[in-house]
Image 1 (cartoon, rainbow, N blue to C red):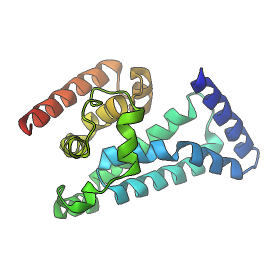
Image 2: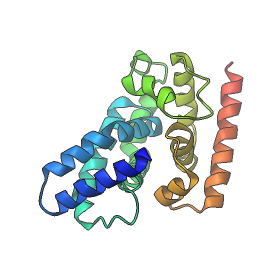
Image 3: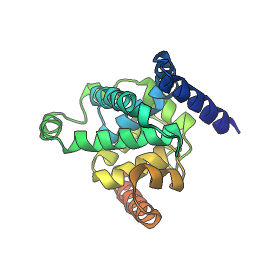
Image 4: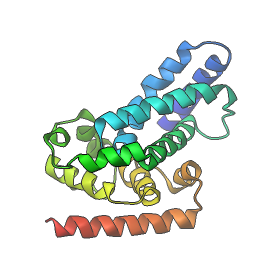
Length: 197
């Protein structure tokens, strides 16, 4: 029942913010920033870009929170903003050009990252068995090869551990579409990871 407490707390903070308490938003950021950053990192594959996407997500959330009506969980609404922000970043010509000049094997991607360290420990997924840093790097590289539609469902389901209903709400895809894209993404990842063993 811990999730319900978080929802109530989020709702109270949102009400406070909508009533004029701007500091309530700071508490929402503190509560959700790590998960938003983690999701953005797995989506865009770069720490700096993930930080930018997470920051942009919270800026958009701040600007829109007065219109938030609690028809869905705050975290679901926030993830929808984050997924769309990451997709837009991946589509931008500037990002594509930058990624062409970056090697996935550069030392930057091999640094220990608190986000990377916590992912397998806190999010149940089929990838849990691949706990060492080398495997996480391979997984990240494999995920980066997926098209955005497949990447979003595999990150939300297998990395973040969200339910199918939450993914449907976040992405706007039908349940059948979510399941088929997830199946295709998992097959691609299995093939890639099998080939590098």
